[in-house]
Image (cartoon, rainbow, N blue to C red):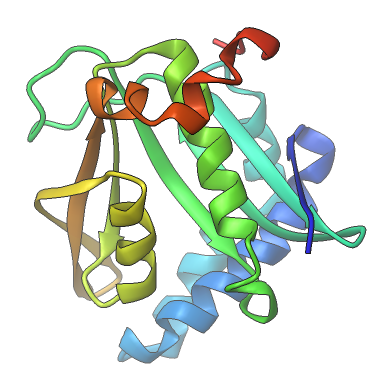
Length: 192
């Protein structure tokens, strides 16, 4: 199955909201003691007007993945975002990467991650970092396959619950040794 990845704009906010709500709920609903807190979080985080404002911010890049004419996933990248567990003043954050449940394992996540890494290879931050829930084994495996390493923990509170995440990072040096990203750089416009 062929995946197309585009840079999203504000007109895609409602699509991204739908993907985000469905994907997050499918992946993490079982961790919540309170369905009300889950639904409040989803409504607040994936409100289309709020997403459209976020998409327009200069520091954010949203990607949207498509298969067979259908939107199947999205990613959010922050061009400048520092994590205190990484000693560097030039860092990018992969803040979100979600694929609809019925499309998982069909290449959409890998295609978006490849695009994110190509953008990172262009921008040349010292590190790209992310956090992922400690129980999200498939995502952790995907990131490790692409060179990300666990470097610490992060805790995030939603309502009355606190969740534990792995902080993972990929150095520019490691990124540039991956030939699949450096070969295509001359044909890509610089987005940063």
